[in-house]
Structure formats: structure tokens, C-alpha cells
Length: 640
Image (cartoon, rainbow, N blue to C red; front, side, top):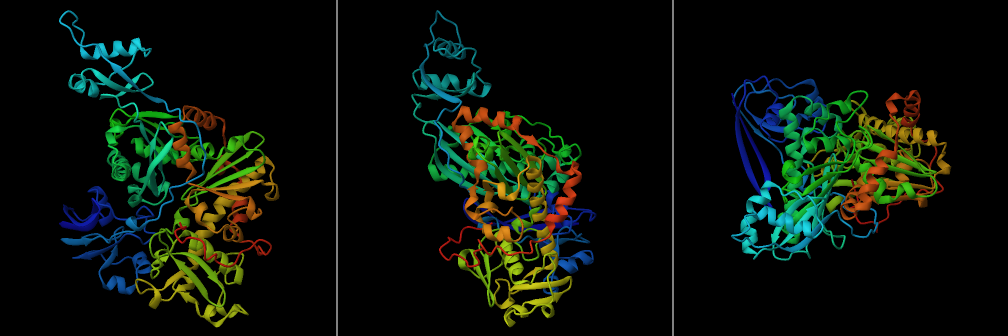
């Protein structure tokens, strides 16, 4: 049987149609078949039939519609030939059209906490004049270059084969006056003439959802440009566990995930080149942060045992590799450093945040929460830092939510409820769905007016008193229980109601319960109550864009005065940048990773109790510090 895939992708800024025909015996689902042939279909749940995101349009014979598809797809979608790729199996020759995803519309947080350090990179340049060859002296070009460096104090330098192969031409073209770039005793580049005024490096944050990179002038410590992309691995599952499971299926699956993230990194590099005009060949140093799993996958190292007790990673400490070994499209000899991890689920991104915020050196009781598909939490007091990780899942990013979406154009980002519901939409277009920050607002507002009770139950309209008819009209019974209509079909971009279902509320309860339970355990270990917290730092896109009062009203965060809450943005990448610029910060990152205590929550009997308590919504309102009105002056690009 022949399966023809058709999709659109951007190449050099232009959309073009792509087509690929593959052969199958019919025992594979369309999703698995696509993955086997490196064709990406968005499946945030990893192909487990939960998210309903892997929609495809199929022409040709397929297996019967499954019960799950009947629940996740509307009758209109099924009538148009839309199926879920994780359930659809070809029974003959078919044509599969893959809808264009949200990638190009995605808003990605690139900035973070500001910290200035003196520029002292661990790469250096030196302009030298190499002795010219003589008939009387048979030494080769390599030996004369190394002898020149030895005279200037650089002992036992290593010249890689790739550079040695071009050295004769470079020396003679430059009349033997060249600039040598070194990292430790390793020669990274030999350039014609004096280029000592140029020294460039890259700092990357590989997130589960997004990848952000910055091009840095290493002499000035100045960031010249920033670029960001959706992590290409997202098509293989929105959360870490989905990708671990996929990578554990075999070497080819692991290679596929590695290539997806390397392609993403190279896409960012290409964009940085376009923005600055600086050739990738001149980019001679790279520092990378990411959670433990992302670092393993970027290196092509199996993360299988991270997900199995006792959750042991293949490596924990700082790891160095050359750009050529990794497949990065920069100077192939450029050293690439992956910052150290703390444990299986507390990675180098957390270490980066600690470096960027100076958390280890702060006085008082400071709590840092980085909310994403995984929630990393660090608490600092009296010179001690304790950390943990909770599996929050992708609900905060709009995944596995019936009308959820990432923070792209058309996403509802802010919600306010009065006599009726008011919304703000990214791009000021007709709404297509609701993203994470909008979901938090919505839950908080529904709690405020009593439509959701403390257990998370969406109440019947008949149980509610004092609400306006417009609000009561939005409460209805769907196929899987009560639901609240956020946007009626006539106002939505795709002509379908945008709703919050009872199942959506439960998904968000699970996510917020995990995060809050983690903070409760760390507070318990250090003997710190909510009122004792001196500062609460929110890292990452979610922490940067949510309304803090909404997060507190729904019980996601400890109850502290709003003035004690500070968003530090993409502090993980800032930490990577600081380590790129400063040898001192790079060494500090290794010390911090070793000294930070890690708490494995699954091994604590009190975690389940804390989790069950944290699942409930607070009964009281935040009347003393609550801000129920949307600040109309807040820029509407602040969403997750």
C-alpha cells in the first residue's frame, strides 16, 4: 500500500508544499509511519490517544473510527475526512494532508534576569607570526606553528586534523601572519591576518517546548542577537516522559530525536547569522543548558534510565564536546559545553537559573519556581539549597486541554468575568483557542464567581445564585459532564465553541497540585511557612506572563504579598550566557550543581498527602491583594 503525505513548511522564509510517498503493509498507524520516515505530525501526548492534536485529512480507505476519535473529533470533522493519526491505519492507498501547526506563530520568551559580569571567556585569540619554511629546516607547517605558540607561553597545544589540512594554504595566503583561537590547549581556529578584535560565542536554552539562542560578543559580553524556535522534538510528544519512551524504543528513534533538536539549533544559528551578518564559522564557543532529558537527547545519549527508579542519568557533571561531533553548523572545532545537571529531573536549566539570579548568595528565605511541562523548584535559606522536580505535564502550555493551544496568534491570553466574560486575544484576531496564561485567568475567575467550587467541580447553573443570565447561559452539560463556553462559535476563528470542560479543570488541578505539593515539601524540609518567604522568583515563560494574583487564587503558588513575587524571565538562558562570558561563572555552575540537595518526591510518603491537599482550590478570595481587573496597559504579547 502507498501512503502519500502532503504538508507545508517554511524554507528560507517562504512556505512551500512538500510531498513524500512511502510504502506500508497496513499494520502501522499513520502517526508511526510518519515518524518512521521523519515526517512530523504534532502529537503532544506522544501518540497515546489523549490530546486529539494529531489531526490529519485522509482520502482513501482507513480502519473504522475508534471510540476515542468519536470523543475527540466533532461530527463535522469526521465528515470532512479528519482522523487522528495515532488511530488511523491505512487499508489501501491513501493520501494524508497534514495541517500547518502553530510553530511560526508561537511567542517565545527570550529575555530574562539581568546580571552583569566582567568578560573573561575561556577561549582566547592570539596574533602570531610563524617562521617561514627554509631549505635548511625540514619542520612542517604544524610544527612551526606549535613552536611559535610555545615561545609565547602556550605549551603542548593540539592541532586538529581538520585545521591542519587547511593550514598550508592559510599560512601562505597570510604571509605566515595568522590569528590562533584556543580553548585550553586545543586550537579551535587558525585565520589569516589579525582577527583578534572578533570573538563570538553562542548560549542556548533547550527547552522541552522551545529552543532559544543568543549570539554573544565575548570581548564585550554583549548579546548581539537572539532567535527562538519551537523544539523540533515536540512532534514526538509534549512532555519529557513521552520523549523518553520514544527514545527508548531503539537507536533509530533516539537518532531521530537528536536530529530534530540539532536541526532546531541550526535553524536558530542560521537566523542569528541573518540578523547579524556574522558567519557561523566565526562562532567558536557554545554553552548549552536544558533539563537532564533534553541534554541527553541533544547529545544522542539514551535517557531511558532517567525514567526508571532510581532515575539515574548517564551523566551529571559538565560535559564538553566539539560542535562537529554534535552536528552544529558553526566552527566544527568550537567547544560545546553542556552545563551540569543536579539529578535525573533537575537539570542544567535549573543550574542556569540559580547562576543568573544569584540565588545561592541571597539572604533570607527565597523560593524559585520554574513552571513548564516539568516544574523545577529550588528553595534557599541559610546557605543551603534544596531542589525537586514535579511532573506538571503540558496542561499549562495548553496541551491536552480541549480548546487549549500554545501562545500563538489567536490564543486567549487574559480573562476577566463580570456580568459576562471579557477576553484578550494575542494578535487581536478572532480567537482560536486558549493558552496557559488564559487558562489560569479563567480558572481563577470561575473560582471567584463560584462556578467552580473548591473540589474543582464545574457546578450546574441551577446550583448558582446571583450570577447574570449571560454567565448562566454559558454553563451547559456536554458529552463528558459540565462545561463552560468561553467563546461562542459565531465569534471563534474556526466556527466552533471554545470551551472549558470538567476534564480540563481536572488536568489543571493535577498540574497545579504537583507544583504546589513540591513547594510544600521543600518548605517543610527547611521549616519555612508561606508567611516566612522573603522572595518568590518565577522563572520561565509561564512565570513571566501569568497574572500572579490568578496563580495564587487557584492555589498554584504560596500565599505571599505580591510585592515579594518577582518574574525573572528566561533565567536559564541568562545563566548559560553568563557561563559563556565568564570562566568564573562556569566554575560556579559546577560548584552549585554539586552542592544543591535534591529531594526525590516519589520516595517521600508525605508527598501524596501534600499532593491531595494541593489538588483542592483555596476557599477564600485574595481580597486584600486581588486585582480582578485586567490592566489594559499591559502589552498583549505577554502570554504562554
